[in-house]
Amino acid sequence: MQGSEKAEEQEGRRKERSRNTESGVKPSTITIDGPAASGKSTVGERLARWLGYLYFDTGVMYRAVTWVALKRGVPIENEEAVTALARSLHIDVVPPTVDDGRQYTVLADGEDVTWAIRTPEVDANVSVVSAYPGVREELVRQQRRIAAGGRIVMVGRDIGTVVLPDADLKIYLDATVEERAHRRWKERRERGERVDYEEVLQRMRRRDQIDSTREVSPLRVPPGAAVIDTTRMSVAEVLERVERLIDECDPPEAPPQRARRDEGG
Ligand code: DC
Image 1: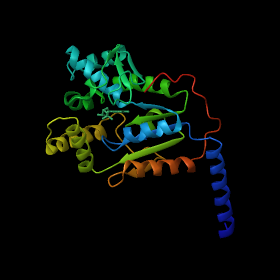
Image 2: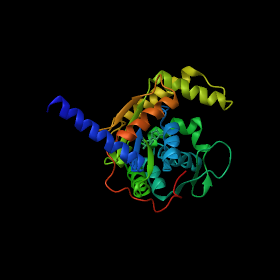
Image 3: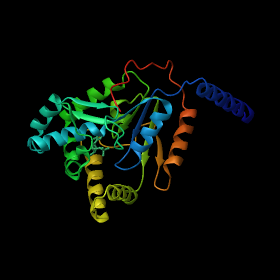
Image 4: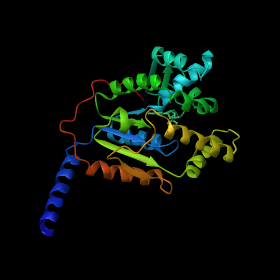
């Protein structure tokens, strides 16, 4: 193609995109994957708020199963028992019910587990639970149902690869393990916990290793995903990049309207 024709075509595409953005035609299903503390939940939540979409952090489902197993004394290494628990547990993610800084409220069989699922004990066991194929099968089925209405930002480890491989926009956030451990360490200190950075770093390395080497749906960059290394970026800078990706994204053919907006926080 001649240079000028190419430039014309690019300009045509740019105008088309900008018409799409102005007319409100935006990617309806957006996935954000990446390792722990790569910025997924902060970016996902703000992006969803900006777009007026549902924000759904799938990690809370694996955490809820883990917490309930620990609480009920179900041995974490008993795959069959943990899988049966995942199948029978009713997990709901609803808009915040308490004004204490939470992004949403997580209910496990009706009990508010929003903060309980963030304890170091859950952190230490959730990678094992999320590696069980039966647990994943059940939770992925529920996640697809929640995403079926579109207008959603869904965050996790396998959303662009397995749960919604045909999403309109797929994003993969990354950062060095040292930077991610530092973010977690800072977060926990700000919550008043006494934490040792080296220990947080060791645990982060271990979780990375389990999440990326497990047999079922290991953490991977989804085909066609935009990769953003957030190591030296502020949240505002990451959001700016994501907004640009949205403007450049080919819009879905017909943006579906969400039927229900009460399924997540
Ligand atoms: O994002 P998080 O730290 O809350 O995730 C908790 C755990 O759940 C983590 O070990 C990875 C796992 N997870 C997963 O396997 N698939 C997802 N879609 C989301 C989380």
